[in-house]
Image 1 (cartoon, helix red, strand yellow):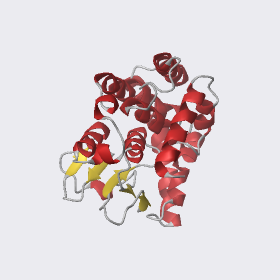
Image 2 (cartoon, rainbow, N blue to C red):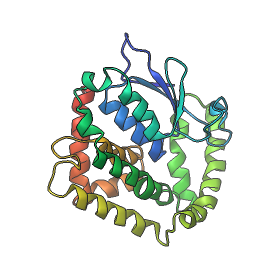
Image 3 (cartoon, rainbow, N blue to C red):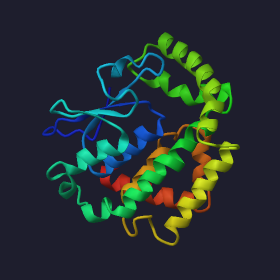
Image 4 (spheres, helix red, strand yellow):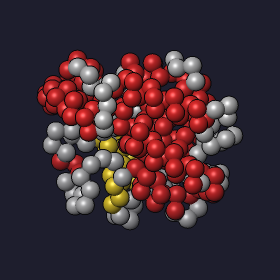
Length: 246
């Protein structure tokens, strides 16, 4: 278990995740922005034994709150957190701005058009899948032999699923699909600092999180180098560093 933003007076929620999952990382970006304590629990991508307790939701992210409530799905988790008394106020966040209709619209766009492009762009070959799963060898939850074995089997499985994911989302060329989405996003941001204007909103954190979660992979550097996406990404990074006090 890795601990983030823990406060002595607050019981952190547990967030069951894959380290490179865009939906998990968009959730964590929002939690960081809202200054919500959480513990990340890494899920074995082969057995998923850590989330067998969840009866109604079998994917990640899954959040378990201090009162035992189990919530699956990135947006539902953030909605529950944002709806908790005092959360937005304590984070200095205006609910009408952060959760505006436009913010929600583009958060949904992120789920449907942007986040789904990340996976096929980091799984184009067995070698690329092996690299993507490198995080397993850094997880204290896994012994080294188990991490290496899971990484090897997982890389083969991810590469085999690559074509199926493209077909599911109607992608002929995964890079073209990704950068079509990037162009749509940067056009929406336009000359503003953030899509939300002077401050990030839910949608800014969603798109940002999808890319922050692959910081060790070549695609991350490619996205940072993009002439419009890169500067926006840097601005969100700076806001979160201020929020986190780093």
